[in-house]
Image 1: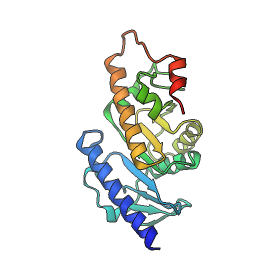
Image 2: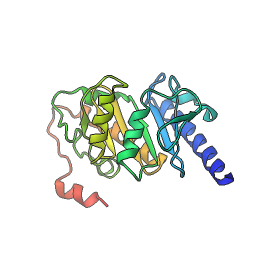
Image 3: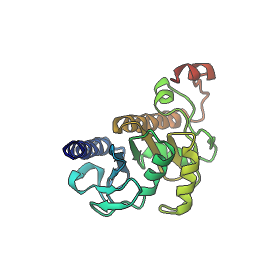
Image 4: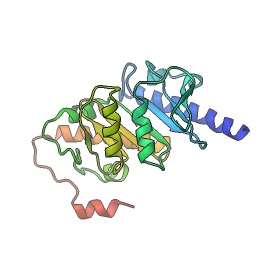
Length: 212
């Protein structure tokens, strides 16, 4: 029991630290975005509804049982299902980050992107940390159809982009999910800066060589 409590305390503090880092660098704003992390017993800790990632109270995080039932903490975000869908399909994931980050959202609104893989492989770190980025069609926040669409896309990718909404990224650890989300945002920024110009993305061979 002591070990579980120690693990939980550390994870709560880490969620608050990562949230503040993301907020302070302008990757989220107001009360948008949410973060979750999974304890070794399968329970989830998640940022609650109407909470700013820049000012999280570790003690007030929402807690869910391994079965997805809210059991403790502040009222959960209506986007909790986005996280639960990712954990369901990405079994080895220990954390999920969902943001409404500016450049990724901007890309999600473009009409001419490939819905099977929205961003080209512009850099090695994007390939290593994100890999592929399928587009999930638009549904209103909280719509059960969005949950089903995310679950379908998450079968083949640990990162998805919600149309007119933002990215949802899973990682083995919270740090992995954070870094992948940040790499996704920077690649979206590059993509928009280069939009309309001839690109030289990594070749299929170069991309394959980067995969573990």
